Length: 51
Image 1 (cartoon, rainbow, N blue to C red):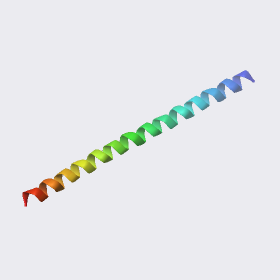
Image 2: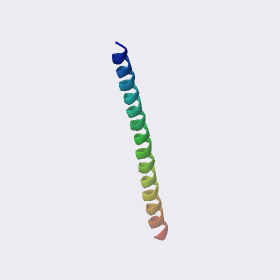
Image 3: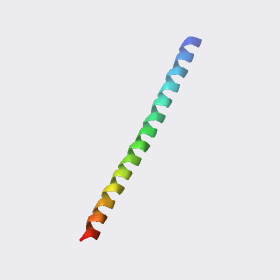
Image 4: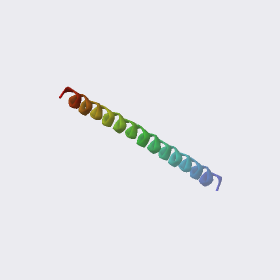
């Protein structure tokens, strides 16, 4: 019984770690997307100002 409990604790910990990494990945992807959007907006602004 102790072994099963320890195994469940281990699996729960692994699942929590996986979820945390998923959250971190989503944050990084959102940051990259925001940076790309900002760069694109800057290019449009530069082109507009050249005219």
